[in-house]
Image (cartoon, rainbow, N blue to C red; front, side, top):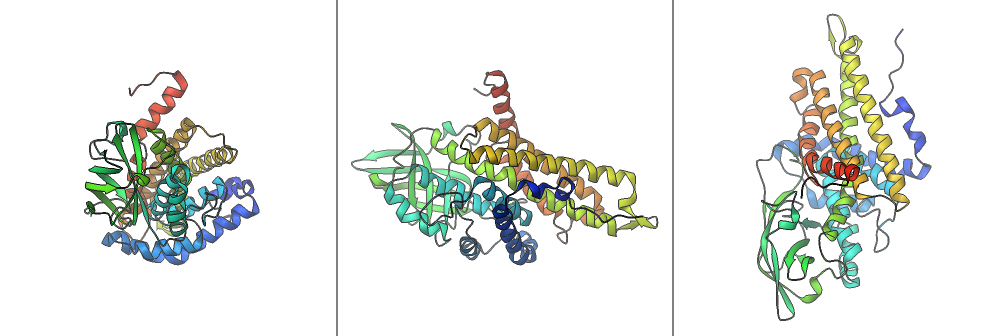
Length: 391
């Protein structure tokens, strides 16, 4: 006799790990994704365009922009609550979670952690409300895994700074109102708060992407951008600044990737129960059940890892190598789950009528950005051996 199917997270009663408040926050975000994102996202992906400013305002109203930050209009939630929001957003699409991550964990976090009081008062309330959009200019075309080699430079000219250089693969870049840009200076790497209407600043949107198509990606061009001395982030010098921001965003990815994987797996389960071959559901075949069982194990283990790291982060004790463990494992396993789910759907797995190929393509980017699989592997290796293999 057939039993009532369980959802992947219900297999281990994972809801029991969450507080009532955490479940409530998760459910509000999940409802928004169901109502607003799922009905539209396949078309956004196909056309390679999204109503980014409209979505930013809605996400601000939802309270998820910079939600884990304190003050200045931010919600001040726990790290776990932020992670759960990222999971639900990425269950909709990685591009939507990326919009939120870049806004809150990169641009807003940089200003919140390292900016002057004037920076915070000017930008954070509007960014939390989605009325101003931010981007984060670190990566360059020739310097991804090695940001210390960046060529973008800032030089003093009297009391001003002059910025020259380019940044690549910048989410929100061509729609941003403010860019946090990292540059070489005589004092070391410094961060600058750059209004995007500054003369000499321009952004060129990147097209012909096959991944993160429901997301704005751009190249930033800084051609003699003149900034006052007050534009510098005063509280940090060196790579500690941008790397701290990246760890914030990577934490969201640890949870977020699981949302994409869960959406793929639930789609594959539902499809395999409904799809018949040889006069019975393909879910009844042993090979299909093995695939589903293996994926559910990896998904649930990934959630347990994310929750453990989230509790550590809420105790203000998380270390960079622990973030790397989470990003390495969950991005890798989520991509593997998406690929396996695609196989269960057969030919239907490559159409946008189902979310799997979209998630799979998106996860190829998430697997690479904010620290490649290889770099996080070496970070973990260094933590275990004390020896850096990439220097």
